[in-house]
Length: 99
Image (spheres, rainbow, N blue to C red):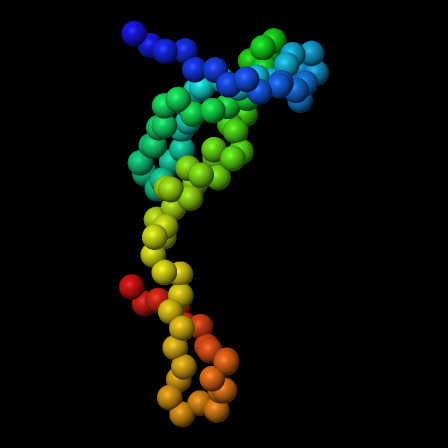
């Protein structure tokens, strides 16, 4: 038995047809990572009740983009001070991680 998901969020006018109301519905999100197709079921999107225009919810896109980013969870940079440099202790040179 499938449960129907709903969110009680006020809609807004459709940007495409200017007639319908955009309401939250749950759709399948599709994206490519290199050569792999990634699908996420039950993803929130704003869908027009007249023309069917749909736009993925931006907050949800930001979350899924962060989760699917290959560098998530890895340190972006390591900080090292070159020996013999005349940098004070409050100044650190950022060097890209070589991993």
